[in-house]
Amino acid sequence: MFKINDYIVYKRNVCKIKEIKKDEETNKKYYVLLPMEDESLTINVPISNEHGFIRNIISKTEVEKIIKSIPNIEMLTSANDKIMEQNYKTHFSDGSHEALIKIIKTTFARNKERLANNKKTAEKDTTYFKKAERLLYNEFSIALDMTYDETKKYVRDKVDALLEK
Image 1 (cartoon, one colour):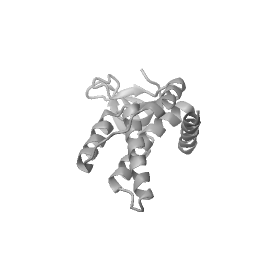
Image 2 (cartoon, rainbow, N blue to C red):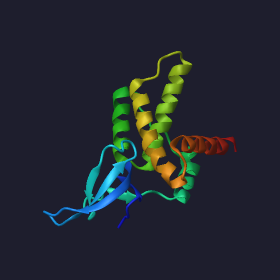
Image 3 (spheres, rainbow, N blue to C red):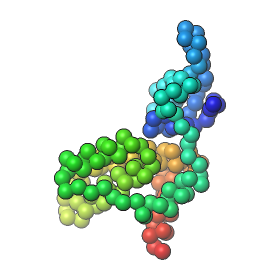
Image 4 (cartoon, rainbow, N blue to C red):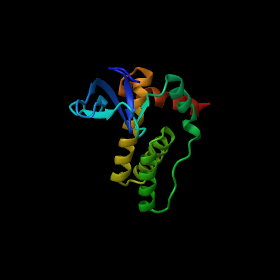
């Protein structure tokens, strides 16, 4: 059972447990969650977690392991933009750290290539890049006890150092 002020992941979003309350009609206990992305929103989730949508934030050690694996995580490939978007959706729904990293690496590389060819970046790639980056770095920032921006820089610096070896 989680406690008030714990950070957890609900579905794919990092949330803080604001309170634990009991529904008088059903006699069930609920977590009242505040999503990091929008603290004006609250989400009530049964403590029983019967659908398995709540999980712990990963540890700092796990984050470090994931960061070390980033250079070896393959990008998504497709000759067709529609199929690529479907790949993004599938990986985004998966929600695993590796799936999010695949999206980030792929969309970043595709937009970088477009810019190198004097083309505009693709809106869909940019949208998926930002969404995947937000989910990944929100969780990493809690595990690393850093701000979102510090986390982005930390991950980039670590990956750059790994690539220089």
